Length: 374
Image (tube, rainbow, N blue to C red; front, side):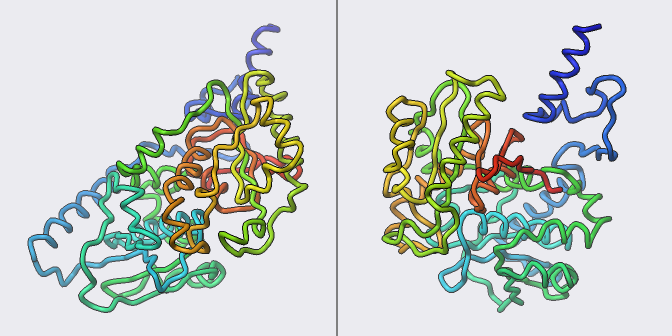
């Protein structure tokens, strides 16, 4: 009847706009509606095989602390030190999560050695896998620098996955995961890594907020009701804090705001939502439209000059001062907003991919953005 048709249409719209995990199962869809391609049964994460890996990692650490010799051990270390280029939030998260996938697929123990600008564990603590390193590496490991070398890895993933070195140290700002999974399909399936939101699951497997970071998160004053998070990256409009190539012209922010307004209409949030603007320059607060929206209380600007930093390009004195604040901004976009309007930036892209599934659009043109592995 008419009521069934309306309910089916509403459900399909929810599946398109802001699906829950349960709604992605075809048996929840209206009668006669089927996926164009078979959807994988992703199952629980981690699965039993990956749980066995995690337990082996625990045993490995215990044996290390006991001083046991382990000549057969194989290790992969993601490195971000004072002598390596690490990139910003997006580059680092893509590098770390991809490195974890490489370790899992190649049967190596996974560790993170990230000391720049401060040890990573001061911001993110281990969750299910203790990736922290203490002390130094006794033997000089084989090093792979994959910064900006995605094509090179796609051409020969076995150079890393099939390496016979006992210790591998990888530096990377690239999202190597899809090519790695394609190169080792059987191992990926056995470990339960063939998942549409793998990086989201991996982030929760590896990380949780440190005590200091959690205190910073608790200081946020998030508004009630729906929140649309906007991330705007100008690139070259904060020269006192860092130098970066231009991304978006300041006047293009109007398209981001127009997109947010269209989302209010689409999801019936008019009068109930707030917009939170995160940008890499405080010059946006001088734009007349931004000022008008802030005066009405519609648009919130949670940043301050100390939090507008780039993890890799800002001077250390500035970065350390704003470190927890800028991580809190990324966390808000990833986990605490109901929709996203994004710029061309890994900061927002990783927030989309790692956070829960929700509506997301590119600010220029208000084009839908996909946060799945594809």
